[in-house]
Image (cartoon, rainbow, N blue to C red):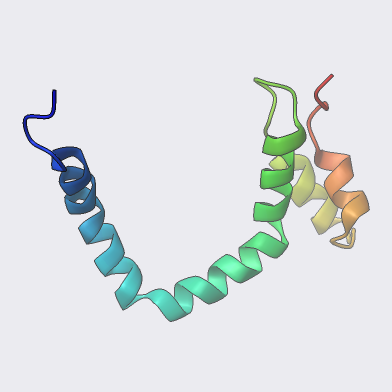
Length: 88
């Protein structure tokens, strides 16, 4: 029974309104940051989430930063070195 049609949609839109307003005010710098992040730690994190075993989906960020500090180049080999165990 729908006593107040669209109520949930309106509530969600109201909650998101402030976030969207903030994004609109800062869109250019946020877009640049997001683009750079998705080429590095974001990419590794999303890959770990998609391919990692349930409960073990986090990249070893400490090892990642240690390898970068040692001069390791950012490439697929680096990402593989810090990936969690794969799904079976």
